[in-house]
Length: 592
Image (cartoon, rainbow, N blue to C red; front, side, top):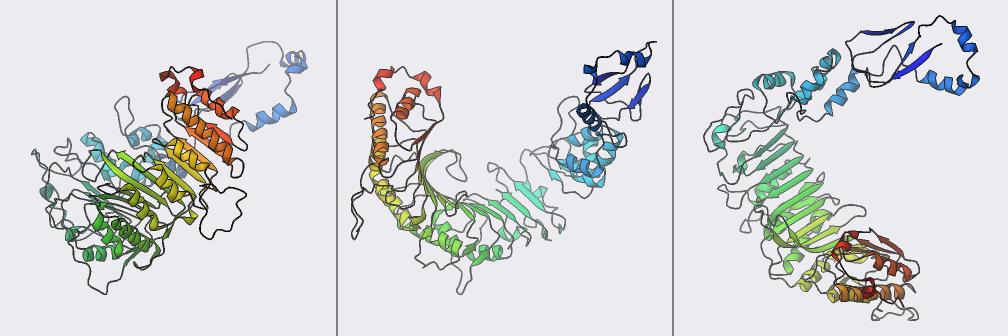
């Protein structure tokens, strides 16, 4: 009789070793952990034929079972544990470079190469040179030297933490051991050309202000693709710009000892970098006293630009976009510092941004077409590019294309602007006739009648999200209120025309339903408005997300109101129910 034993998780053994059983044998390749079927013949003197003849037919494998077993047989020529070197190389390069924790805490490259001789050959081969080029951790000098030699010509990643490095000689990077980090001395020898340099990231601590050497990379870095300099206090003329740059990030303090470029110098530099994909400037743009370029001066065209982020003063940002032309689908993220005292400043900003996106004249009066708009008044953890103190910001995210993130995001210090005038001026620069999505977040300073008047008559507005501080009664009352008849409107009045006539979806996100009496009134307003709308302009979907005061009994109440065509979606956030001791009778309202 032949008995089959299935052994799983077979530990690796030495390469070429054999596992033998009486009457059969199988070879386990090193590193193979696949399930292995061992055929072993029990010691018996009973003839095999007589035993099989007495075996019930129910134990005999069927044709289907035999076919499956044949397909599951291991390929003796190429075991499953042996992958082609090309595939293993690609797998190795995807391994996280940080060290494996455990005995010795060795880098990942060494852990992979220790598995077997085959893995050692592949991991140390030229195809895996990048595996050894990550020296962002401090290792033993012998390990560091070995990693450097095995990295060959691969770009290296090195992080230097001032003021001391444990094994600086292993990194071939000698710095002084004083308490102060002397950046000028450290980089004083980096003066020649760097033809192999592709990525350069240098960040200095703002608290330890030092000068950057004037002769840094005087020979240039012609193939530099990624340049990030933060608080380096480097002369504009010494920055190693390259025609191959795709990512440019420059940060500095407004009180920098260096003189930053004029607008003409900045635009001339950008013209030499046509492949730029992302730009981030903080404290870099020329001040408002900077002289404009002498006419005639053509605008800088960056057609490959995908994202531009500015943490700059308002007036400097306005001037910057005046001389720039970028891809219409680019994302413009603006964090504008300083107070804004005149609403016309917003008009100038949006006019210049619109002209830069559309490659149009600044004087063009065509508003920017918008598909989505988010307006918020929020507390942000980083109120400016150089401080971590929280601050209040007007925030506007503008979607100019469908199914995309914000094309323009503007965050402003509110200053002394009246919120109603502010939003009205903002709207004047936008063509909202195609607006489909609108979101308000923590926008308590703007009264509901103001934004209802501004956005309530839009013909294509289908979805509204109201977050946090929301005046429920005003909002839902507007949904069930007939709009005033417009001059020249010949539409029949048999069917009422409501505000937000095209609205189909309402989302209440972290909405404050208030205390017990207020919550009851709000629920009445919601039910009444939805019932009125259901007669001519029904709301198809009401979503309630993360609303702690909205309890299950309120959900059941809305559901039992039997509002035609309404799909009620609630995330069932019951966490807030634990903090309320209201009895169900106090919140019961009539749905009539």
